[in-house]
Length: 296
Image (tube, rainbow, N blue to C red; front, top):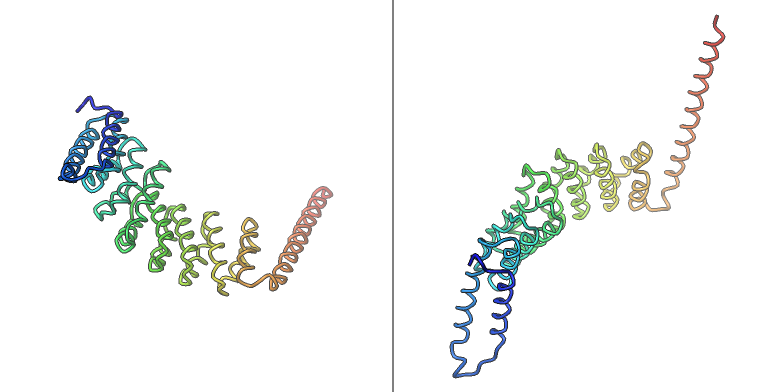
């Protein structure tokens, strides 16, 4: 077993596929299914042992082979493989768990959301989306309290992708998270859900210390058409120049292009007031300097 090589594993799987495709007619075909199943189980055992004892290349071939012919028989192997040092092994394991959809793997998959490899994380998130929402969403909500901010970020994104309106309140509470990335993903998820109950929390997020969180909150408010967002968006447009275009787009969605002329006039008058005030301050400074120069 220790000398089993990746190429031999691939050959075994290919051989099993070829046997399965052979058409055998009675009476010689009697018991073919039983023979094939017995052979398949033996190959699965070989692949399990190879995974546990092999190097990276062997583990890759083993986990890939098990994902093709041994899904139900290798659940624990796939779960353990989520922590493998090789990203391909972790990615294939996540893909297999998404196909199995055994509730036992939900928590390990949620913990695997902390994986820093984008390929693995994509497969993990895709796997979780394949579970029935009633099974996975309650566990995702619990994970909003996970100490790892990367998990909390990706959980927020998943909750937005699931589209379940019942998670709106939990996501709104997450807008107060200590991690700005979590707050951003929560606001983005609320934008996707389009639940009117998130309007006030999103208005509060306009005061977030992080630029990106404020920006996505502006965009989210623009989709609701709710008049409560008009005044805070107008104030933000005047006070924070870096959000001006986003605020204009959202206000356009809420009020209509035809009602924005007073807003443009406000911008023009604000610019004029800024120029006049600046000029007055500079004038006062010059007078003060002249008085200082003229004094004995």
